[in-house]
Each structure stands twice: as structure tokens, then as C-alpha cells.
Image (cartoon, rainbow, N blue to C red; front, side, top):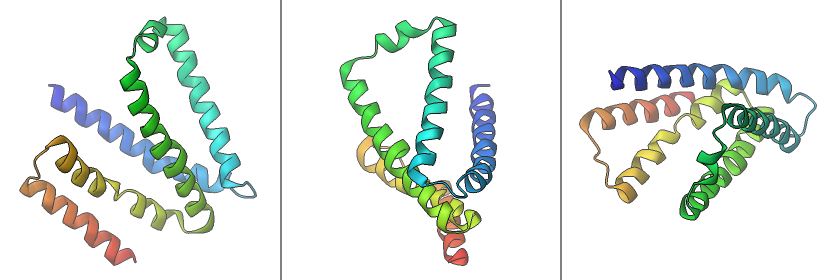
Length: 141
């Protein structure tokens, strides 16, 4: 049952990530990518902060250990700041359909890092999936 819920959540996230670049591409017309990222980040932070405040879940945030704060800060810098800024600059200057496919190949990096740093196993299914991602990028390039 948990696998089904995880799968459905992943599908929902995929759909959101698939639709969002269209809005970003059009929204960035005449807008500096850094300014666009600021707007997006402020809106997301405001919505998430409101959700935490309204649900009374602030103690969950307050009780996060310092070590986790540091690791989550590094993730935020890599993904939300540097990665998203590169993404915004790329879709502003290039075709969103191409940029999205290249950016969507990030699981290849994740798979490699998860194997090296977390000891996760690379299965035959994952290798086949990764091969299809690489083939797709080659075909697009």
C-alpha cells in the first residue's frame, strides 16, 4: 500500500514539474532570471510558512537538529538557489522542452551519488532506466 502512495505522489510531482516550466518560460519574458527566482522563492516560502503556521506544526521545525539544518541548507543552496537559477537562465534563453529533458536527467547524478555516499544498490532496472535517459539526451542533442 505504501508503494502505491509513494508512486501516486511521485506521479503527482512529475505532473507538477512537467507543467511548471511552461509557466516559468512565459513568466520570464522580459524578466531577469534572478528576479524571477526571487519571486518564485518568496511565494513558495510564504505558502509553506503559512501552512506550517496554520497547522500548528511550528514545533516540528523548531525541533530539527542543527546537523539537519546544515544538510538542508546545503540542499537548498544546491537545488533551489544554484540549480534553479541555472534552470531559469537556461529556459529563458533556450527551448523549454530541451532544457527540461536535460534537467530531468539529474536522477543520473542522484543515482551515482546515492551509490557512492549512501551505499544504495544499482540494479539492472535502474541501469536500463538510466540508459534510456542518456539515449534521450543524445537524441535531443
